[in-house]
Amino acid sequence: MEAFITEIPGAVKLYNWFGHWPAFHDAEIVSLTLNREGPSLLRVHTWHQTNRVNVQGQFVIEKPCIVSFLMEEIHDLKLAGFSPQNVISELLLRQAESGIEIAMGDCFGLAGSITAARLTIQFEPAALPVQ
Image 1 (tube, rainbow, N blue to C red):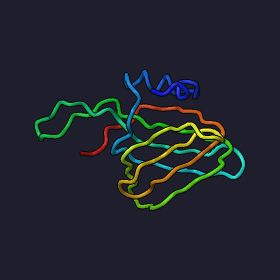
Image 2 (cartoon, one colour):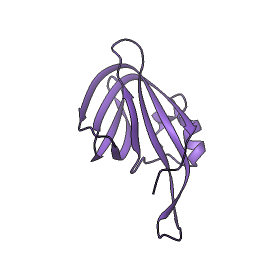
Image 3 (tube, rainbow, N blue to C red):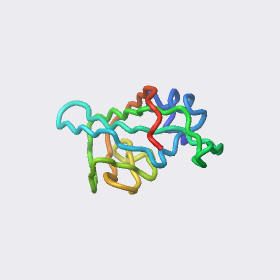
Image 4 (cartoon, rainbow, N blue to C red):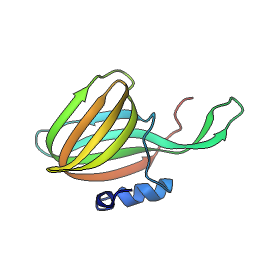
């Protein structure tokens, strides 16, 4: 985990939940709310995929949660695609000149990047995704 991420409120708690920084591979964007004034919110359903396999031959997943990225003062955004299900290949946090960039890798549906002056991370346990 890059040093600047530990300065984001809530980031260390998320790290401790998983025991590592999540890659958000195959995570689903649950919602994105953009506000001109006040905070905007990106909610992502993610989990930890183990290397164990169940009787159906699928990887066992643990610790499902909804991660909320509360963004203040959005400076830039580049978004493409949208569908009833919006799966991303990854989610990266990058230090940007004007704050923090959230980069969402393209898989199916919504993808792109959002740059905000400030970011807060919250999460709550969730149901396992349907496999």
